[in-house]
Image (tube, rainbow, N blue to C red; front, side, top):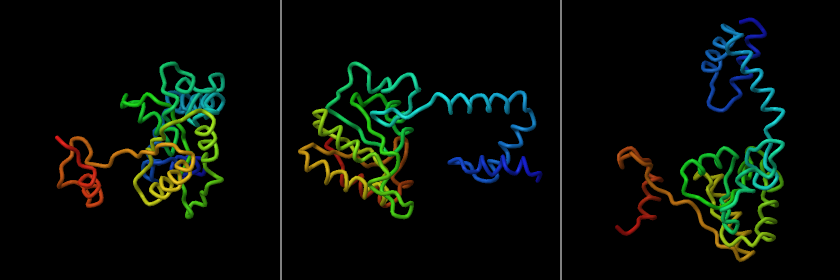
Length: 198
């Protein structure tokens, strides 16, 4: 493969969800029709680099001219309720469900010794300061259910309980439109432990 194309493939393959073969297909589509795709992608990437920022308050995505973001500065939000997520993209996922009217806080990762991601690398200090200074009464932990997510949730709960804040975590259970036979044992165990009255 020629060097510029190989470089494009290697760069695309670094994106989450794109393996080498998917990155190769994407690169070939881009260079096949540069006026249609490559130029538009280059412009969009340059525009995003120039204008997209992380909100100074929640860590979610915003633009340079709207900081804090529209969620943090929006009216009708319950400022005493904060949903803690790992990444800014998680905020968009929770917002899409339409069930949460509080504010958010993106940690920008989770505690992970393997990735050398500790308390200092995450936005934990900023969260604790928000809770202490803004009269927060409840923090909802919307973190992944893997070992690192559980470790992060445990650490945050310990720190937040010291401040007298109610700490909750998203319920675990079966995904919508899924059956018991398709679920892994840990999901089933958590679904059973979190069962509700009907």
